[in-house]
Image 1: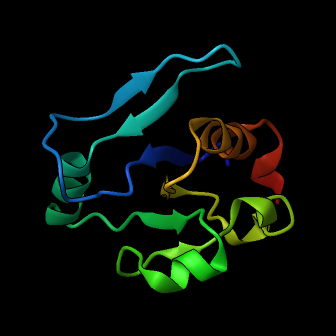
Image 2: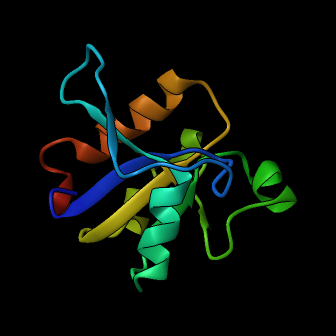
Length: 116
């Protein structure tokens, strides 16, 4: 995953305004990079095509998602790592506890995962 930019986004993707990426400092290592909905909208408006991964369960994914998002439930992320692109912008989102999102973020950013 070294070549991919991994970010966390809010599930309420189109609700808030922001100027760009923000960083949340956590104990476990590098800052978790989070982005606000307005920043994601600007990326899309500028022609970028990030890969969105909805980390909720399959049942929740079926109830609603960002158009074009792919389902990658938190409990399956280790087994399905090959589905995550090695390059480009990857945006993870979920209506779940922050610690779950952090775990997914750090897992995808771990050294050596670029070999998947």
